[in-house]
Length: 169
Image 1 (spheres, rainbow, N blue to C red):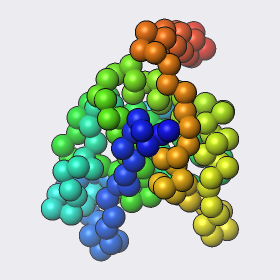
Image 2 (cartoon, helix red, strand yellow):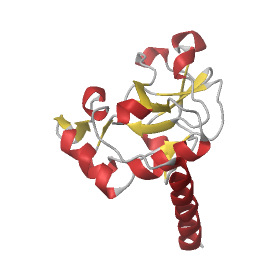
Image 3 (cartoon, rainbow, N blue to C red):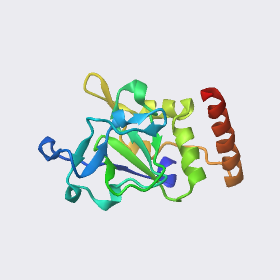
């Protein structure tokens, strides 16, 4: 299951009045674009003392919206380096592999944005308001996912990287 491979936690929760323009940068769903994350001019910053060290983003973490529109289920980004002043917001999941390994992290990123897993995630979402869906940590960690032997995982990641590179030109 996802919960056997990944620690699932939500990002920083804070009040609107705590937001500013310095401190720890908070990534939200809009920062996740095309499998990576981008910084935006309207990013929120909060005081470092409001963010526990355990939710600062680390290499191989994955971030994905916890509350989102149905078409954005499966939107995910892989963190490629440790960040001491960046976290995710309270409506974003931080998925941290129990085994810190680049190949595993890349495989899980590809897997979670695959149509099969997206459909599994959609099946466990609960409607929250008129346009948003709440994925729910307790339901997410119970989703079964395929984990092949390590050599096969390496082969899958290499093939997908080459395929994506050829598509992107």
